[in-house]
Image (cartoon, rainbow, N blue to C red):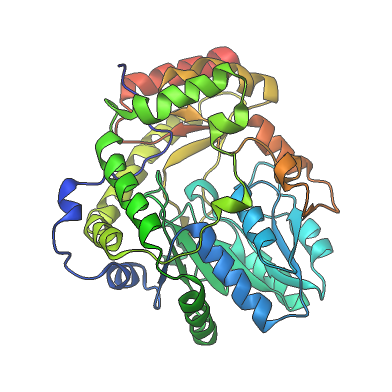
Length: 402
């Protein structure tokens, strides 16, 4: 079968990661690297967010509303909906940005607001400080969604430490994966104690599900290479595209049953601890590749490549490109999405436009910028397997489509 590039730059898992004795436990190594205080393993990033929301709901029972970006992973919305009594509000973004629109956020924040969830999307670093200032005026807390940004820095320290609570995802395709997994942490000692107590009560062992995840991680270690990725990713992608099922092609088909709360088993924590030794260097290599290719992407007329503001240093699993209009974006995707070159969409739609979220999502304000991002953005992988020749072909196809 033809080679298949992944849509994101995940760190490959080595077979030795399953058997070697790590230099130190995963949470200890991660805490040392990023100066994270007592990170808590969870079954997924969504599980970590759910525990955070449960903790805050218990602390502030009179507050019921959670504000999240109108363009983000649908699992974030499902996590809010899984906590009894909480209501979700979708906030629009600034134009051509992942940052929450301050004016829209100000209008949504009230004495009913429990938390605001700014998101470091696709490895880019969001402006948490602006969200924190607005949230503080209403007494709300800030949960940083750093699911896609493990290793990113804001003014020299890890993302997730500027808000009250932060979390990472260790899902398949992320920089470091346990196939499914997550990490929850807080800079505040009082919240850390409450989060730990809630996690201990909520994230209990589930041996059969953990066994399944171990087997899936073994499969990931075997199939995560261009020579084999077609079997587990490319074939299903092209079948979904042929059927016109965009949600399946993106991987946006979710339900509340996808939120599974349990502890992270010791074997996958060992794999993560061993892989962590290679992760900082791997992320640095990704930053070097990105710097060279961003210069070429900026040469595309009318195309905006999302980057970081001064003082922020994100990671680069892929490039997020905003094309002049939906028609140009769709012309590129028709040619490159099924071509196996690592071009894709991040999410299919803005949150208010997913039918399966309609039962509990509330959107009192319009979100034209989030919809514009969903309509005009595509992603280009920054995997180390993407060679210069293939990258040039991607650039040529984008130019022809403008």
